[in-house]
Length: 273
Ligand code: NAP
Image (cartoon, rainbow, N blue to C red; front, side, top):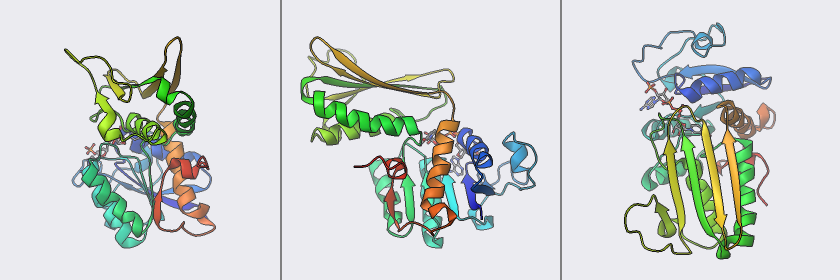
């Protein structure tokens, strides 16, 4: 039996990409498409809105009206908090791609992982998650001899900076090197900044056009430098990963849900040691 997937933020860029990824999977089916309360999309055909042709599923504006095995949520922090609380209260696994949580929001969100399986990732693409492993290796080998800088670029509509992925890359490196990212991160530079301190990790942000998501981490040593780059050219890369995570959380609909807990995409891909 296909796993029933609900998508919140259905009218958004990722909502539509997720609908396409679900349609491409023979193990999943779209069972609910949810938008903001009062949206003009309520009642419209979900398949048509996603550009996939009519599928007879009417868009709704609350989770109470949805039947589903697992929710995929790529919306905004405030909406994700509410949706995760609903899933926790109703025993439904949740995949969360939303970025831009502050520390208190993230803590509150992860508390829901005590009740249901929750997969949270700043980036669901296979390539970026592979890059996390490459970054661990690079940091281990080069880290204390290199200056480390993270540069990211995204489309003009993105509302948070630096990207969640850039921050995750910084976290992976800081953890590998035994540094506290909150203390060593430098976000942008301007004016009389003084010489660079070796332990810092710098972040630079570019916004514009229709860039889906570019990330480069530079390890700048004396006489040589290593750059690890990932470029996403389609949101389907994230959407397919999120659907894979949703299936994994439900044991592919065969083995029952995973144990309640906090997972990420590296768990899904088996990339953790
Ligand atoms: P988007 O096009 O702006 O879509 C966001 C959707 O969420 C919209 O449909 C919006 O509805 C809905 N929404 C926002 N606040 C809401 C609320 N309070 N209640 C109900 N619905 C609400 O943005 P996007 O590009 O799809 O990205 C969405 C999120 O995913 C962002 O945080 C982005 O950084 C993240 N993202 C993550 C990954 C990953 O791999 N983890 C990849 C890409 C994007 P309205 O249109 O009615 O406002």
